[in-house]
Length: 143
Image 1: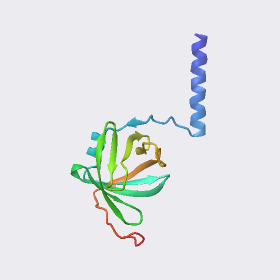
Image 2: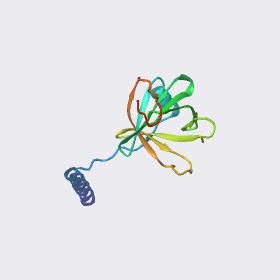
Image 3: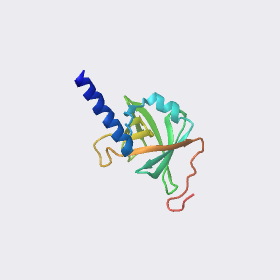
Image 4: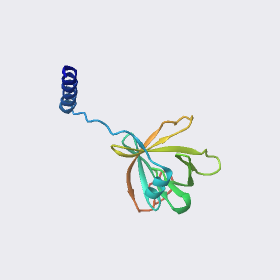
């Protein structure tokens, strides 16, 4: 009984400390399947942030076709396909296949680049979704 009381007291003290310091227990990362991603993304444009700043957007069409829009307004056509629990993108000759793991956390959806390249581990946050098609322009000219 005394051991149980000590455990309850320590647990209560930890919870009070977290509350006073403004900490809240984070939700665990939950994987998102490629089929769930397809349902979420197809017919929409997703906007991505990196480290809290805009990074680019991508429109997802039926059949796995995509259109990536860089911040400078230039665009790149590509395609995506599921590969196990990952989604992999290909943007044509001269580009490598980029595979991402999709994660849902307490802030929404996150994608994490897989592989052993320079950017492996890069994370992009999906900041919003709409049905607007990207407007593409020439690099350096904006839109």
